[in-house]
Image (cartoon, rainbow, N blue to C red; front, side):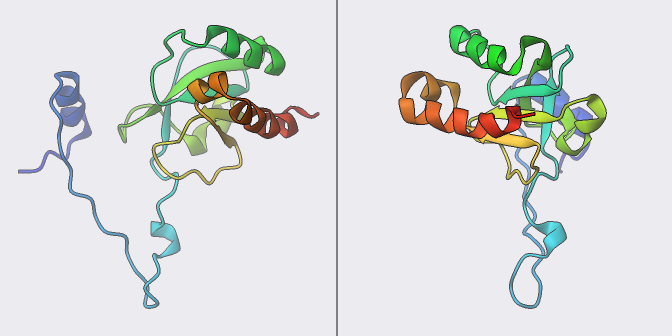
Length: 154
């Protein structure tokens, strides 16, 4: 019997029990293409936000551990420390804030380190390399600053 109640799935996840869910195939049109409303996108893409203020949200898959502290300090200094808050991609369909509701929370920019759990189409979200790559290589740092610079311009 499938467990469909999100609260039940959350309780099981808290106990360390993985629940497998069957995925529904995308609805196809006559031409064999997925219908626009069913295309995989940011529908359901959610972020768990830490407390704080600011119009920039820095996000990654893992919880913030303090690794790359100096690199993060440099990035937040460029943006403005008082403008930054932190978050983590939410895996659950019921946890966190949906990307489309971030504006109502005062978030204008999302700087996402690494890949998002689902496809992102919002101009508000800027995908950059993971912090590990940025710390290790010049090409990843260049990609970060090239993506960040236009968003910092007044």
